Length: 236
Image 1 (tube, rainbow, N blue to C red):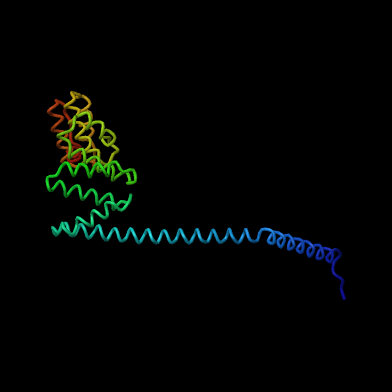
Image 2 (cartoon, rainbow, N blue to C red; image 1 turned 90 degrees about the horizontal axis):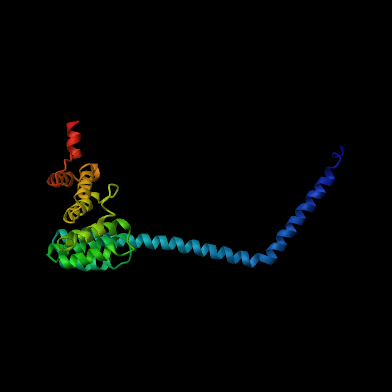
């Protein structure tokens, strides 16, 4: 019978000793830290389970709010305000979510329909000043608040409120810019107003055609020649 190559038996023995040593190390670690490891695993599993449950609850809650919001809008379309108003009031006080902001804005619009400008402005102001709401809702509410109160505001207040929105990269550039330019004219800042009106007229697709046309007309009153971008495109 052939003998194994020299050194094979020693290598097997050393490997077995090494494995036994590692095994004893693992057992020692487990005996020393086993309870801590188990506790950590349990805490981790509980945290994961809690997060998954929170996700499920959040999705369910948002789904329910969405259905309630849609139902309120349908009732408004059917002129059933006695049913819509309580739902909107509940949603508007449901936290810092989007449905709360939209419900409060719809409440303000309904007040405007009733000629209650003061009440509507207060609703818009509440949304604009609520840091829990996403910025687009707050910006829109500020714009609507200012438009509602425009005739009673000093022109410098209009400029101060809307100067952040009266920029070409703003989603509300057309409406905010138009109000700011008009306020600047009242303040005697015709050059600044003219520059802003020119930007509005050249505002592209982000500015509605009617707003661009009004900007051109208002600029002409100031003696500033401005070309509406939509007419430039037609000429091309």
